[in-house]
Length: 372
Ligand code: UD1
Image 1: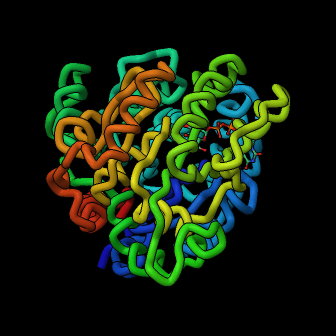
Image 2: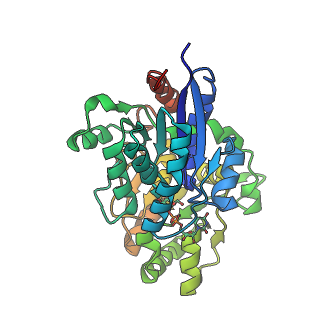
C-alpha cells in the first residue's frame, strides 16, 4: 500500500481560519490516505484574531508557527518566504495547500513553486481588477503559480482561462467558508453576545446593524474614515450599529482622535461564533470585507459593501450584497431603504451547500504521491 499523501496546509491571517477548518476536518477523515500538516505563518498572532478561532472551530494546533508577525508588505512576505522554505525542505510534502489572498498565501506559494512542490489554491480566480488592493496582487500571483485551482463561483473560471491557466487545473467546488458557516451556525445561536450588547430581550432580537471596516483604502486615510463614520452615525441614529474594530482601524481611530455616536457601539474583534451570531440576526451589514459579503449572502442578510469594486460578484448578481461605494449620502440612502424593509432579496449561489471541502479532498485523493 502506498504511503499517505503529505499535504502542508497554510494559514496566516484571520480570514484563512474558517476556510482551513473544514479542510482539516475532512482530511483527518482519511488518515490512511492523507497526512495533513498545518503551518501557521503567524501573520496574525493576537488571541482575538487567531487563537480564539482555533479553539472555537477545533482547528488542530499547528505543527509549525513561523511567527512572522506584522511588517510592511515586502518585509512580511519576505519573512514568510524565508521561514517556510526549511519546513518545506524538511517535510518534503506532495502538495502545499493555500487559501484566500493574504500575504502568507502568495509567499508560501512562491516558496513551494520554486522547490517544485505542487500548489493547490482554494478560492482561486476571484478578481476585483483593482491592482491598488494588496489582495489582488496576491490573488493574481498565487493563481499564476498554483497547479490546482479550486473556485467558489463560475466567473472565476473565466478569469483563470483568460490568464492562460489550463482548464484541467480548474475545479468548481463551492465555498469552504460557507462550509464553516453551515457547520457552526447552530453553535453560534447559543452565543450570549446579544444579551451582552443589549440587542435582545425576552421577546427576541431588536433591529440592529453590524459594521466592519479594515481595508487600507477606507481606514488609512483619516479624512475618508471620518466621512465613512459620519454616514454610519446617521444610520446609528435609526438603529444601533455594532462595530467590532480591527486593530488596523483601531490604530487609525486613536491616531485621528475620532469620536463616535453613542449608538455606534465599538467593541474589540469578536470570536467566530459571536460574530456569526450577530451577522445572522442583523437587519443589515455594512462592510469592506470580502468574506462578509459571502457570509451575508449565505445567511440572506442584506449587505452594503463600502467599496468601489468587489472580487465576489456573485454576491451581487445572486446574493443580498449591494456595491454601494464610499459616498456618505449613498450609504445612508441605501441603508434607509433596507431599514424600511426594501432590502434586495437573494438566493444561495450554486455549490455553497456546506460540502466544498469534501469535493476538494476527493480531488486531492487522486493526486499521486512522490516516490510512493
Ligand atoms: C490582513 C490581510 C487582509 C485581510 C486582513 C483580515 C494582507 C495583505 N492583508 O490585513 O487581506 O483581509 O488581514 O484581518 O495579507 N495587528 C494586530 N494583531 C495581529 C495582527 C495585526 O494588532 O494579530 C495589527 C498590526 O499592528 C498591523 C495591523 O494590525 O500592523 C494590520 O495587520 P496586517 O496583517 O498588516 O494587515 P491586515 O490589515 O490585518
